[in-house]
Structure formats: structure tokens, C-alpha cells
Image 1 (cartoon, rainbow, N blue to C red):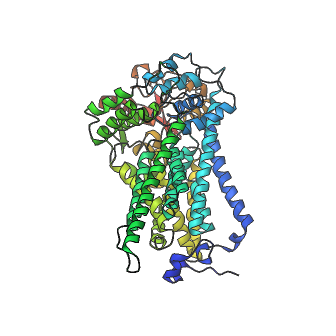
Image 2: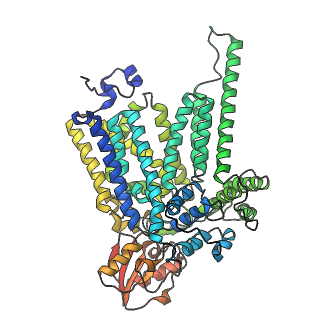
Image 3: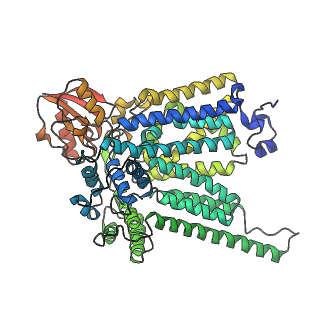
Amino acid sequence: MHQSWPVSTLPTHQQGSCTIGEPSQRAQLPWFRSPSVHALLVVALLGSHVCLSALAAWGDAATYDETAHLTAGRTHLSGDFRLNPEHPPLVKALAGIGPALLAVPDVPETLPTWQRAHLFPDAGILVGYAYLYARPEEVDATRTLFSGRVVMIFLSVLLGLALYWTARRMAGPLAGLVALVLWAFEPTGLAHGHLVTNDVAMALIGLVLALAAVWLARMPTWPRHVGFGLLMGVGLLTKFTAILWIALIWAGLVVQFLAQRPWAKPTSSTSSVTADSSRRLWLWQRVVGTALALLVAWGVIWAGYGFRFAASDDPAVQLPVSAIATHALNSKRLAGLQSVIIGNSALFAHENRLLPEAFIFGICYASNKSRLRRTYLLGHVSDRADWRFFPLSILTKLPLALLLLMGVGLFALPHALQTRWRLTIVAVGGSALALVVLATVGRLAIGIRHILPALPALLLLAAAGTVWLVRRGRRFAALAAALLLWHGAAAVTNHPHHIAYFNELAGGPAEGGDWFVDSNLDWGQELGRLGQWMRANDVKWVNLAYFGTDEPRRHGVVGPRLDVGSPYPLQFDRLRRPGVLAISETARRGLELDDAGRRRVATWLAGAEEIGHIGGAIRLYVVR
């Protein structure tokens, strides 16, 4: 019978060399040793995550980006990439498989918005609206959207399995289960794991890339370089911010390379000539291996766009790459080193056809747009990002139990860095930390979803903290169990309003608008539940100021539209009195308005009576 010993009681040399499966790493409870019980728990946790995600996927209205993403995915499957080029095609195409299996018709080429889509980068929303909502007799928007979301839930399950496998390999079966518990009931993961966006997919490929980098560093063979190149290509087809993530990982590989001291002098027992020859061969292998990985990634990008330079096989469709790259170089608002690098690189790549046209355009457009977005934080709207945005997002959007377990995990970190998993910890945790730091000093501050690739590292840290508590006796184990239950309760009690989740420290979803808006709170997801509230309270119509891209009438929401197609300025003269006003928090807080418009909204609401809210995202008022 094996006996489990706390790692801290082992000699130092045994701590660093113990392997997965040794008693010192198991930290098991008596009931936990049964493989069948363990497998049942894994299935139950994944099943719980799928159920919560599927229920939210069915009940949530289309969020702001989904209308364009899902429609673009349908066109990508047919080899056309003119629509929504600001995001790579992979995740959108995967989501498009769902509607394709339901035999949902393709996007009609006769749509006027489709014919001009390449001239207006944001035309994805207009085409998506005409495709999904304007023809209910041909396209059932609810079933179509849900079918695309099912594919996203599958990717979320894969991320849960990747976290489970990583934690189990590093610290034993208990750590694997804890990591799975944390992901299965993590509100931010549940909020975005079922949406047709590329955020959770990027978190998945980000974790896999970090683990693959360790795999490559330990044995840099040719097949491993090829495999890493394939993963880089997949990452770049998932989200353009993968460029930053890959750069951080390569920086880590360079540090690992330098740590091996290839310039060190040979020992006295080694011939100087032989040592010099070995060092040159060693260096040459790594240079060639790096070039091979980059070449493979380049080939994967071309494969993702059908090995065609043009965004469409229609010769009349040409994306305005030169115009947008020139704008990046000449605009005073975009002035900076980033514009110089991206603008000139885009022009050079386009002129020499080094990359697909849609890929070049997408990087340039996304770079420009990210620096022109407004930021809302703590009641204030700004044209520049606030460095406090992402730190406060982590502190308010993650459950308090998770934050506490992350804090405990810091106590386990010093020992973990002395084990054979040191390189994995540095790769996963270091990349995540660097991403958060760069996002904090960057100019794009919209929602916590933009640093979602850092979440797996935080969950692994919390899993380590949980195991650290369990190993310290029954009282600490009971504390760990209580924190895990508290963490799970945060998701269950807030279901299905996961996007609007805020922890107790922030005041909960009802107070979320005091902190953030947009995808941190109100992304259009509550429109269907507004319709349910109207039917339950026999409200025939409402004045609607809605931030989103769905069609209100298909949810039974009728009445004057004050937003006249979000995100355009609110039209106050359309208000019908007396009546109910339903206003999205993003519109209420004036993210898309100037100072005069925000003051007018405040004056407008001062005389109204607030009667409630829908999931924290839509406020309800009686106006007389």
C-alpha cells in the first residue's frame, strides 16, 4: 500500500526529480483512488459545463460580433473571404459547419450588401443582418445561431480537457480534477465559451502553443519543429493577437537557448576543435529548425485561405489594402512605431503577394481599429485606454474564491519552480503574465475576453493552491473544498447571465455598469430575455435603446427604436410617452456618444423611474 507524503518532507534532490504518479505527487483522498470514480467525475464536470453552456447558448440573443462572425463563417466554407476580414477565418469557418449540417441556405450573392461588402470592412454586420434576420421564412436565426454555438462549446470542452491533462501531468489526478472544476464553473469561460467568437479558441491554442514550446525546447527535433510550425499557423488563423502570443513564446525559447550557454568553453577532456564543431552544428540546427517552423506556419496560413491571394474568386472584389495601410502611416491619431511597422509591412507583403490579401488587410485593419476604440471604466469614457482596465477586470470579473485560490497558489510556486516542471510553469505562466502586462500598457481595452489566453495559467495556479491546501491536513482540505463550492455557486447562481457576472467585491451584476460596459457586461445578449419579461408582464411595447446586432422583433420586442441601428447616436425625439424604456447599459453609459450626448442621456433619465433590469445588461424605466 502506497503512503502519500507531503512534498515538503522530501529531500531537495527528490523533490526536483519526482515524476508524475509517485506518491509524493498524488495528494489523493481515500475515495479518490478508484479510476472509475475519477473518470465519472471528469465526465460529470464536463457534462455540467456543457449543460450550462448549452442553456446559455439557446437563451442568449446574438452578441455584437456573432452576427458578422457566423455569416462570414458560412461564406468562408465556400472559399470567399471578403466578409469580416478583421478576424482570421478558422474559428468562423468551424462555426459555419453547424448551419451547413442543418442545410441552412448559403448567403445569397444577390444581396446588395454582399456585393459591396469588400468596400466596407464593417459590412459583416449588415450582410449578417440581411442573411440571418431579414428572411425568416428561409433562415431560422435561433436554430442557425445555436448550431454555430454548439461547435464553440466543443472547443470549450477541449480547453477543459487540456487544462485537466496539464494539471494532472504536473501535480497528479487531484490537481487535474480541480483545474477542471475551476474551468467548468468559471463565469468568464461560460460567458464566452458558447459564443461564435475566437476568444476561447485563442485561449485553447495559446495553452497548446505554450506546452508545445516546452516539448520543442526539451528535444528540438525536425518533426517537433514541423509540429510547432503547424500550431503557429493554426494560432495565426485563429486570431491576429496570436502574433503577440507567439512572439512571447519565441522570446522564451530564445532565453532557454541562451541558458544552455552554447558559447561556454569546452572542458579539459574535450577537444577544442571537436567542441567548436559541435557548437556550430548545434547552433545551425536551431536556426534551420526555426526557419522550418516559420515556413510551415506560412504554408498553413496560405492553406487557411485556400492557397489563393485574392479574398474572392470574383475578380471585381479587391480589398483596399493599400488604402488602409497608407491611412495607418499618415493618420495623426494612429501615429507611432506600430503604425510604421504594420503599415510598411502590409504594403510590402501586398505588393509581393507574400501572404493572402485578406490576411494582410485583416492585420492592418485590426491594428488601426484597436487604437481608435473608446474605453469605458469606472463611469468615464475615454479615447485612450486606462492602464487599470485589465487589472480591475481580473479583480472584479473573476470569482473571489478563484482569486483566493490563486493567492494560495503563489505559496506553492517556489517549490514548483524547483521541480522538473519548471520550464512548463515558466512557459505557460510567463506568457500569460507578459500578455496581461502588454495589454495593460496597450491601447485596446474593451473586455476581459482580450486577455482570455492568460486565464488557463490563472486556473492552473489556483489548482496548485488547492492541492497545496489539501496536503496540509483535513482543516485546510475542508477550506479548499469550501472555496471550490463557492466558486461553483458563482456560476450556478448567476446562470444564465454569465457575461454580466461581477463578483461580490464589485457589487454583483447589478452594479457592473459602474465598472465596465461592452463585452464585460452588455453585448446584446439579453434581448431575448427582455422579450420574455414583456410577455410575462403584459407589456405590449417598449422604447428600446439597444446595443447589439440582433433583430428585436424576432424576440417579441416591438416599439420605437431609439438607437436607430446600434451604435449610432440615440434619437431622443423618437421616445414615446408614457411608456417603458429599455436601455442597454452600454447605451446608457454613453460609450458611443460624445459628452453632450452623455449629458443628455443623464438628463433624460433623471425624471424616469427605474423599475428593474434584465440580467444587469438592460435597464428598465418608466417614462412619463
